[in-house]
Length: 416
Image (cartoon, rainbow, N blue to C red; front, top):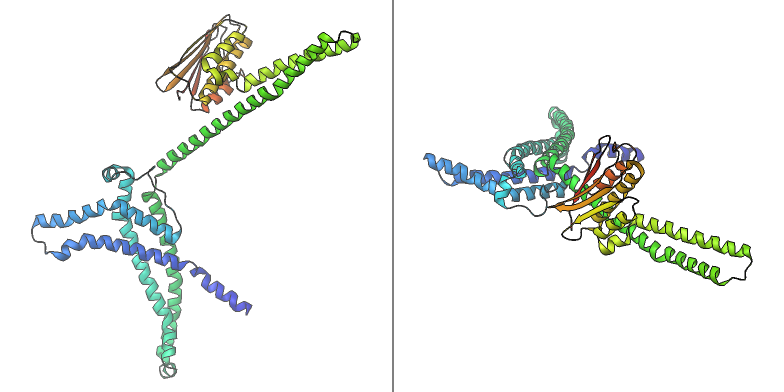
């Protein structure tokens, strides 16, 4: 019993799913038969004698098929989706364009190529395959049919009975061939329709780039929001507790004058450590996301950086309105890191920061009169700045000849 079941499985396994593929071929042939009917309808109704009538009989049905191109495309997509489980995406972003725009688009021309050329050829091959299925099924069943008609017939006609056995075997072999041909034709039709009815490779790449850009933008915004949240938690939580601790230690140092000298020294040391911890935490908070940037904008935040710098820094900010928080944060950290590099490496006596918005571009220029020679790959933090700028589709360029001066130019999207 187990051997019989295994043999039945081996014989019938190649035909698994063949019903859906045969239905796929039948519907494809039916669709193309409908198109053929439209093309032949004038010739069926009227006998054409004049040249103008012949031209009308050719071009009017052809125009009707062309205008029905978007509908045919949707029908074909439904055929692939329902019978093969293949979802061919639309080549258009959003709703389908108007018929005139569809005809002028590359996607529309590709779809017409399928409906008027590739589709009919594939449907013709499908009709031929269906014919093979019919012949094979008839030949494979003839032995059983004749055996059931009369039990005496094989005895009375042994020669014909032997030939029927050969025809049956040939029909079974032809069934396997039809199954293989159906599968090959379905794969060919799927590849052809995916290329012609769906987006082209260039459109897929453009769509992929757009999706990745949106994902990256969302990730950058999420990281910036998380950084602002951490800054608020540190500012409102740990920093306030340290301030309270420093105040209490200061009060203890001022009021507990009768303590031994060693105890007063311990309290004083703890008070000094608390104040240093507050300063370090304040720097960390400003490094995460300065509160002044969120409260008062980029101009005030950059003025704060300039005020803390150990050299004169002239700041000029000319913006029509507040920018998006992500763009403001990138511009702030670029200026902060660039000025830190000026202080560490440039040996400059002054620096200048200019921030202006030209159309859709935010231009940030940081210049100094230092020794120059800065390279984006020289380990001065410029490579990190370039990556930060690139995360929002910006660009960074460095002009720093040996001997100076140095100018770092950053272009960012001017997004309100």
